[in-house]
Amino acid sequence: MANKNIAGINKIVAILVLVLPAFLLIFISTRGCEHKFKKLPDYGKAIAYSFEGVDGKKYTSSDFDDQVVLINTLQITCPDSCAISLWHLDQLVYQHIRKNKTKKLKQIKLISFVTDNNGKPVKDLSKIKKALEDNVIEYDPSIWILAKGNPEKLYDFKNNEQTLLEEGEEFYGGKAYLELMLLIDKSNHLRMVGRGKSEGEIRRMFQHVALLMKQYDKVRKTQNLENEK
Image (cartoon, rainbow, N blue to C red; front, side, top):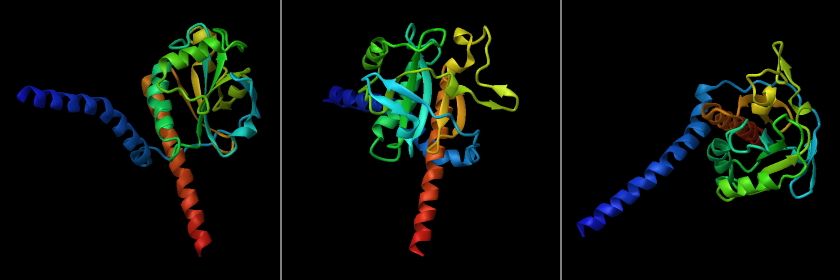
């Protein structure tokens, strides 16, 4: 009997070890980041973009009106860790969106443009699709969309004499944008840029997503109060 009790306690402890960090991340991201971050800056409107999904469906930026979109690239030659850490993107961003897709995070989409190691668009997305299906828990293509198209123009932003299209040997494929994630708001404006190779940057990106959603929630509540007057 004692052994069974000990086994049961060990099982509970193991579950808490796995679940608690994720729960704390959600709590901190959705409640605490208001105290850590100011209102997200607006870096200007993104260009109208279009692409084809892995299922052949055609998309344009207007399909994501009233959606918050996270954009990144994935490389066909090395989808798990070349320019973006697939595991951290999955665990720290996608899984939280998937688990809350009918609640507060239902208006968030992930769009991954698939390229070769030089940033050129790739037509055959089957390898990337298989990588997601093999490595991601319950991959949902309606949330995480694989894209055929050229992302370079979409990354053409400049601020404080800096450009996201910077080039150099220190970047994967010689191009900085391949390592970057973009946070695009419901009005197709750029609100944050972060590196996708770093766990800390991906975690910070998710916190900014939560902050942006909280800002939208405040606006909605304010409008509801005004309508009730």
